[in-house]
Image (tube, rainbow, N blue to C red; front, top):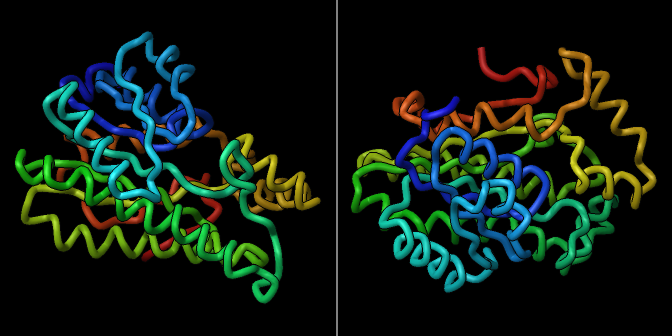
Length: 260
């Protein structure tokens, strides 16, 4: 994929570790200048990029912080060609306790609102922040990250599943609204990734058996890793997908089948 993204500037939110870090590395290897944005420090990610790129502190729940992220990107690189809205609440992190697996009627108001504020409102904020630059260029690529839990209807994670469903519908609305401006908006839909966040939430909720269950429904018969997602992410940020917008693209090894 070397050279596929030459000259492009792409923001990755939630890039300090895990899946976001994998996106950032793959985009950089394909030639993009990557802006690694996170509420956590992105020094490790920038190290993996060979010092090429920019690290930005961002709290996606704060619109002013997202605007500052976009402004820092334009100041440093003069443009914003794409964004991968990867930052989300799932497993425990340095700044949130993560999602607890509970029956829907035991989820607290605070836990519900925190999930929506990060996963839904945060994605909306990040889109709002980058669209002015993309409109001015007449071109842009927004990739929102959902989850195949919205197709499986996983129990005991209603707040997370609902938030990821909202992200997918947000994509479709934005694709219609922003298409005339030359901005493509798509949803990448991962399966159950063997990330630290996933492993932590399974362990903390005594639900380790879910890992085996997810493997058993995967048509390819194995666990999924972050690197399984990066080819599709690069494609969606490249000219190869210039006539693709408003789509939910599942990358889950054939765990879920959609459409006809």
